[in-house]
Every structure is written in C-alpha cells, then in structure tokens.
Length: 319
Ligand SMILES: NC(=O)c1ccc[n+]([C@@H]2O[C@H](COP(=O)([O-])OP(=O)(O)OC[C@H]3O[C@@H](n4cnc5c(N)ncnc54)[C@H](OP(=O)(O)O)[C@@H]3O)[C@@H](O)[C@H]2O)c1
Image 1 (tube, rainbow, N blue to C red):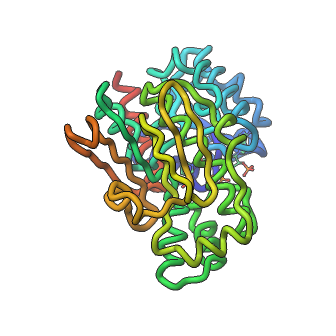
Image 2: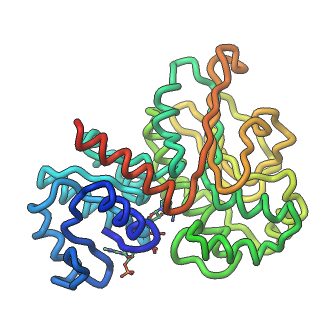
C-alpha cells in the first residue's frame, strides 16, 4: 500500500526476491499485477483475503489513524503487516501492542540501521541514558551546510532525493516537518518499543517549539556544532541551550530533543555521524560504568527503508 518513493522500490525488490505482489494501492486506486486499475483504494478491504502480508508505505497525513485502520483490518483478517509509516505505531501503540509480533516495524525508526532491535537487545534495568540521531535528513542537511552549502539548496536536494517527509515545500517547512512531526513520532516509537513507558507522538508534538527563520539563521551560523539529538535520561540533563525541540517527563525518564551543541557533551560527540545516517547510543550503568554501546547506519532513503522492510517481512513469514 502506497506506491511512491518507498512503495515503488519495495515492489521492485519484492518481485526480484521471488514474492508475488498481488496488487498495489495508491490514493488513486487499487491496481493489479499489470498496473491496471481494478478498483477504488477501499477495494483493499475486500481483497485482503487473497494475500499473506500487507506492506504499508503511505504518508502520515493525519495522526496515523488511516494507517492504523489499514493495519487493524489486516490483523482482524489474520494477516501480517510490515510498515514504514510512523503515525500508527506512535499514536496507537496501546491498541497495536497485543499484535506487535504480527507487525514488522523496524523501518519506522532508523531506516536500514534497525535501531529498535539493537536498543531492545541492549536494554537492562541499569541503563541510565539513551541518545539518538533519528532523523537522517536533518543530520545530512546541517552537515552539508557546515561544509559551506546553502540551506535552501540542500533542503531542496533532500526533497528531490526522497529523504524528506512528503508534503513539506519551503525550507522552513521541510526543517519543521522533520523536527516537529517526524522526530516526535520516532521518539514515541523508540520510547514505547524499548519498554520505558508509554507516550504518544501527539503529546510530544504539542510541546515542540516551531522553528523560526531566526532559528534557521542561528543554526546556519552554528552548523559545525549543532545536531538534532533525542535524549532519554534517568536524570534531568538540564539542557538550556537547545534550538527548537521538546521536553517531557514520563515514567521517571526525561525525554529531551532539539538541535543540541555537540561540544557540550562527550556522548554527543560519540553519537555524531555523517550523511543521512542515524545512530543510537546506550549508556549502561551510572556514567556508563558497564559500557557505552553504539550502532549507526543509513537512516533515510528508499533503499535502506526497503531493506529493513524486507528483513521484517522474511522474518514474519518464517515465524
Ligand atoms: N522516504 C524515506 O526515506 C522514508 C524512510 C522511512 C520511512 N518513510 C515513510 O514511508 C512512507 C511513504 O513515504 P514515501 O516517501 O514513499 O511517500 P510518497 O512518495 O509520497 O508516496 C506515498 C504513496 O502513498 C499513497 N497514498 C497516500 N495516501 C494513501 C491512502 N490513504 N491509501 C493508499 N495509498 C495512499 C500515495 O498515492 P498517490 O500517489 O496516489 O497520492 C503514494 O503512492 C511515509 O510514511 C514515510 O514517513 C519514508
């Protein structure tokens, strides 16, 4: 479902991996194997009995309800689902929780890096800090700006390459959509999936500061040192110098996100990656006494996203 940047690449790779893609769906309708329109998109609800697994790659234009309805209809019919859409899992986690073993969701956070699996494996009761770069697009844009390119040009390039979330047009919109829509969704999924408590993206979003043109100018000037980082810590890190972002306290954990000055915390320096990459750093024990562990890899783009979806799909079908 969804035949855009991700859907088209997934379709191509599913076929080359020997899977039979019975139909595809865009906003305009339901299409058969030969690309002929056979029904309106709601025809999905009747066609589902003929398939094993639903792959969902539609944009989040609401709070995830559209995707949630597609997913729960599949579950009601005993089907498996693989998704890269973030709204459903970040706002309807409680409703989906009992069926998580039927849902492949690694592509929702960290693209091909599979940050969620890594984080889950590293979680012990002694973990005190988790830091993450979950938005490869913002990382790429400000890294390029720090190398002397103009913000407008790089934002346009990120859109053209399919790195940016669908829908945003101006540079400010692109940056705000990534920071205040994409990041709250990924943060909520990360927090919930790691079993730290329960938070919804809408709660985080309602606290998020909208970046202004003045903030963008400050970010351009400080692009060498500023990266968008999400931190989940036992102690309040009392950061007062972030640009944009949000803060929240849930279940004894402090969540803070924003463009942070990486020179202010050595852990941020360790976390930093280049390009459209994502990373996750887990500190085990007070001040990392049991070790500090990190994973990083490509976060945005159709190829790494479909790699994560295909791995989920094979694993769900096997089990
Ligand atoms: N691009 C990335 O790097 C990346 C990485 C990770 C996750 N994602 C997620 O992947 C999803 C898709 O991203 P994309 O870049 O592929 O978007 P896209 O290029 O805009 O494609 C979206 C597709 O979904 C279809 N669609 C929209 N609403 C629909 C609905 N209600 N029912 C059925 N189909 C619908 C659209 O149909 P029409 O063309 O007819 O409008 C289009 O085919 C998003 O949720 C995004 O957050 C993307």
